[in-house]
Amino acid sequence: MVAGFGDVRPPDSDSNREFEVVGIIEDSDSGTRYAICYCEPADEFIVTSKTGALVEDETLAQEILNDFLDQAADAVAEDQQ
Image 1: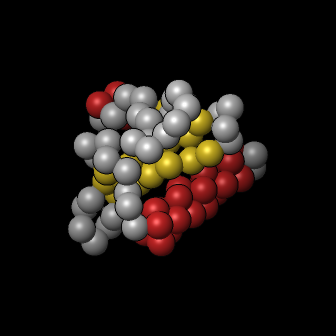
Image 2: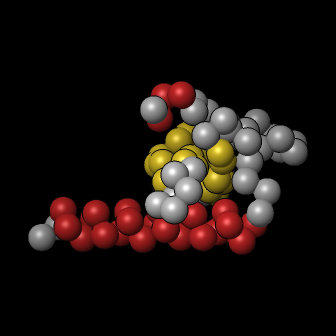
C-alpha cells in the first residue's frame, strides 16, 4: 500500500524537494486514508490523499499529522519498555 504513494512534491514548490511516505493514517469514521510524507533536508511534513493530492485544508492536515506523531511517539515508548 505505501509503495503506491511513492515520492511526492508539493505542486507549488519552487525547489526540487522530495518527500518520502513515512506513514499512513486512516480516518476511523470514514475509512479515508492519508499519507504522511517527510522531506528530511527541509525537515518538513506534508499530508496527501491516497492519490497523492495535497490536503488543502490546513486544519485537517495538522490534525492528521498530530495523530501520526502521537502514534509514532506511543510506538517508540512501547519499544523502549
